[in-house]
Image 1 (tube, rainbow, N blue to C red):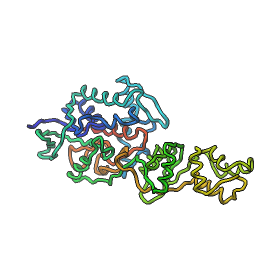
Image 2: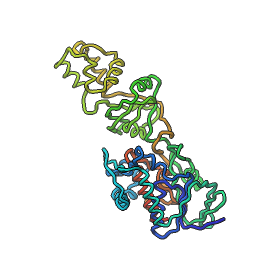
Image 3: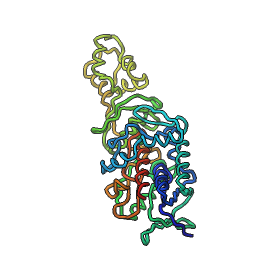
Image 4: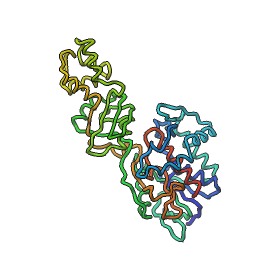
Length: 393
């Protein structure tokens, strides 16, 4: 059986639904397909179930791409304010957390329901639980083949997402289609993901599991000052997730456990003011005691601060303000929030998201080599790339 549409969109996530809505508004006959039975699962689980749907600080410098100027056009044409207007239309209340992150007051399901409602208004045909076996192009028509049907369309949009969180259906399908049509793929890696460490450091992390500190984590010139969490598997928390998108295997990251305080100056001051005080007590004033104990033990330091030589105080200060560690890897796509790399943006129009060498073929959202920082930026890229492509498909 063959059905005809103007536009077929594969992937009913954030980018795919936004594209479908915009194309449908233009009077295009749109089919939106997804292999999962429940659509928008990544939206549903995001932000602890409240969906960090955008960020008021959205700017191109919050994104990583081999072509850093690619996302400028889309982000400027569909901003966080535009998405807020959509929320207001549906009376969805939200709040701002730190660093400009916006979350639903209620649940992430409100975002999914809003998008589905907009799809209905735009007369989008939505089908979930669909397995696609083959995609071809013949006589300027794309043929999307399933078990029992072939869908013909002038435009085909790949909004298939990346490889992160495979338990909710992530797959390499979008990259395979890109390769089929001779598009280059920038190497994909897990991003916004916890880091793993050697057994020695891991033992310390296990002892400190559940402990969180405000830390400044850096790799080369990239610096993030946010929360850091010790877990039984290593280090996590926003600062670690952020740096994971930049870190390269085999290289060190640096951690400042007291970014607001120069520990060397502080210890020297305390040595003069209260020389009889125990070093562990002093360190415990600025860091959680469990962490202070491990740091002092690692430096083989104990006793009164007056009795500690300068070289010993320097060593402890360094371990707090300039702790260098060498991760062994990451936890991988299983816990990664997004995928780094993807369809090479040099092969796509930044104005329309269409392949420069394949008329009618579009790539949007996470499948593209555009990766946002933690904090709602990846959703804003999904909305923006979906919106822009929806004006042209």
